[in-house]
Image 1 (cartoon, one colour):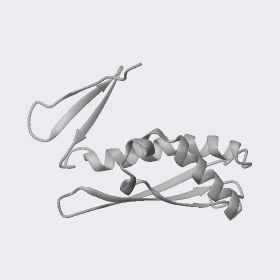
Image 2 (tube, one colour):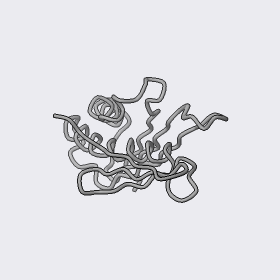
Image 3 (cartoon, helix red, strand yellow):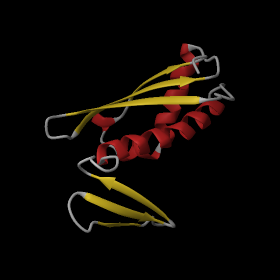
Image 4 (cartoon, rainbow, N blue to C red):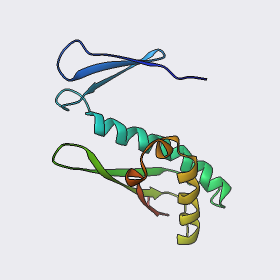
Length: 131
């Protein structure tokens, strides 16, 4: 099975990507819409949330409740992403050992995590009972 995205740019650094029946506008310069790095960070976070939920169910934290993932991406002078941090807060009361097991499992499940080079794998902290 293949996934297909068609990206069109009529001028400048803005583009529109057609994904099935949806359109996603991205401005590499970040002036009109989110830039490419912000979009990648949002995709990573959005992929990580269901990975946390499944990881939670598989590692003894059956219902994490509300999940809030604050993502920080450091960029260098060239605007390239150099590191990613997730500060995850979940509604459920999760002890440190379980949180670590959930994060390890989420790392295994997240497709965006797999697609990134290892140096850009998120450094994750998960705090239970926080949302």
